[in-house]
Image 1 (cartoon, rainbow, N blue to C red):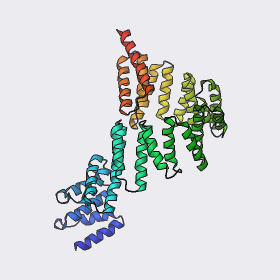
Image 2 (cartoon, helix red, strand yellow):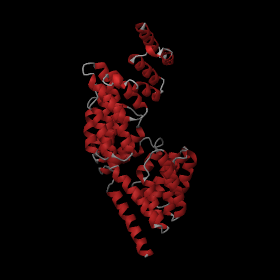
Image 3 (tube, rainbow, N blue to C red):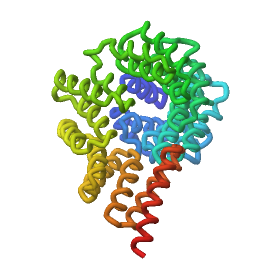
Image 4 (cartoon, rainbow, N blue to C red):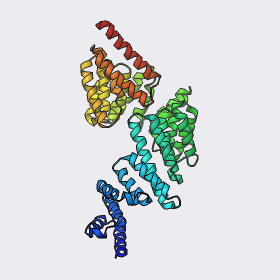
Length: 413
């Protein structure tokens, strides 16, 4: 009787008829239910994404099945999809340890351990804990059992290293990955990024030229980086050569690159205006011209462009840029209102808010509110420190704000 029942459950499972499995088992008399059938019931609940019920069902047989690899795997599965990754880790690890000779079961546990450690790493990264994020990423690498898994876990770790400005570590991993294939576009550009941040411009040029031979999908990005690298190396003829290539196609990108030279601002704006004529309602072109005008102190014009961009996309970034323009115009109260709105959008998206917080600190200094200035400075400083991105530029910004707050103290006293 039980053998036939288990065979029927297996057939239904193969057909993905999980609700029928649940109905079948739950109609059985209590005396017929044993740990094997209850385990199948918990599995079926998991498979219809009722993870709470699946977990509750499985935990009811923990005393009998707690040292069973399959039971531990199923419980870990419930916790994983309930996003309780710490508990998922515990049960997946036990399942892994209990099946030393079953390659299929170990591989399954490894896949979910990689997913668990990756999820934990992302959570720690969002919380600004860079060391813990990297620690979990390193753990995920231990459970990669094939080439695909090794590449994925290595690339995830390298991306974290880039994010936290550990460029040499990222470079070593990415070069190892790309030694196997140069046609991996996503990983190539991750390597280019860390080389670029280390000012290894000649190697960037070498790898980008190779990428140009392979495909043209990222042509705008490649040309913009080549212009910058040749400029940094002092090869202005070569930089100009890449500026004029595909001129109509990449008008805005050329303008953006020329924007690094203050003497060429008018040429930049000419390119941006031409781009806007060609693509009249494109937020990118409004943004490019707006950033150039903002960086050169033409706040009214920049503000107008960021307003147009925001009307088209409602992206919080444009509110942030509008806030910067308003601060430049010394319209501090308007700037505060806009920046607080931008800040809330960032919070709702689980994004960092140190950009808004630095600007808010400046604005509150502007209206003589030292308490709020200190509040937002502390928030921004804590964020960049925890995320491991506190560099010389940010240190100068913090020092400037601290001096502004100190001057308020002296003025108010």
